Image (cartoon, rainbow, N blue to C red):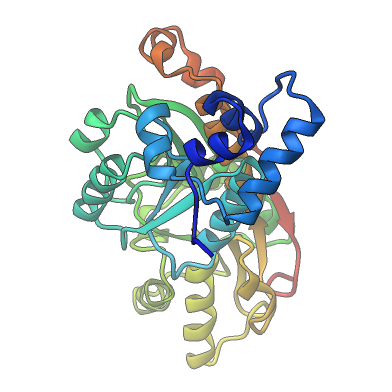
Length: 347
């Protein structure tokens, strides 16, 4: 038995036109008789017909593939985003190419170029925390971009899926204040992203509303990693900062803080209260379980894929430049809410 068959050969055996075969195999809404439809599908199944996706993509200019660029696959926050992207893409019949940049700008540029060369139909992108100005690879990109988690201004960006980071940080800091904590330190990741700046603003606003001075020596800026949490809280201890609570820029930082405080003989929450940000799966497994701000990371990925693929399917690329000027990308910003998850790391 032959391994495969072409559309032309199916048409010859079924004694119909190539166009009719294409309509049936692509399940397009045309008035093809049930008898003809069944005959074509039977021949395709009998000869193990496999569509030539490369040839189809050259004709349609679409590969039904999207790229997902994320900064750190080892951070448990991002795999949930990836799962949301993949689930929604699968519903639309799209495949996903994953790219992990290790939070490096050079790798970001490389992957944007690679994905463009691979003829993906669009890209979902969370940029490096070090990205501030200049993004030539994104400027040259010829496919629509949806930003996720981290914002950036660019003419190819057709939508954004974010959370209200300022509100989340305000909620976390206010909760600590409501529980009686007064000297609240903030251990942040890199402060260069709009995401991180929003969290710093929320922390500052909560203190200001309670007429508590914002002290720079209470704020430590570094990376979104466990190791930074241990280093930063050690710095606070060594500097003699009289903290009774710490708000952390993400849960990995908070886990590092718990580790070092235990090594120092300090008890969470009796000696130091602690709130994280993200609600990764590890936050409920550490001891004590971590009070944190939950981000709907799966929903973020799901909504980003939905926004991107709907744009691709509607063939809006020819309108992007005009609509961007009119604020189209701003109108297609999805802002998802955060939620305070109370566990045992606060009094």
